[in-house]
Image (cartoon, rainbow, N blue to C red; front, side, top):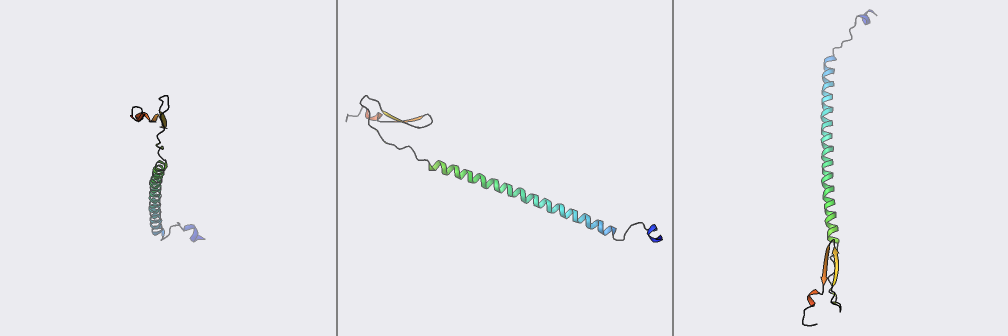
Length: 104
C-alpha cells in the first residue's frame, strides 16, 4: 500500500506511446486526405461523363428529327400558292416559280 501511495503514475513507455499515437494520428489524416481526393476525382469524372452523355443525347435527338418533306403542290386557280410552316417563324412556299412559266 505504501508503494501505491508513492507512485507518480509515470511509465517508462510513456514517451514511445506518445510518439506512436502521434504517428498513428498523422497516418490517419493522410489516409483521410487521400480518400477525400479520390472522392473528389470520382465526382469530377462522373460530371464529365454525364455532360458528354447529355451532349450526345441532344445531338442524337437533333439528328433524329426528319426534315420537312419537300413536295410541290399545284398552284391554285385563284393564284394562291401553297406554303408550309417549317418551324418558328419560317415558312416555305411552293409553286411560286410556276406562276410565270410558259407551261401555264
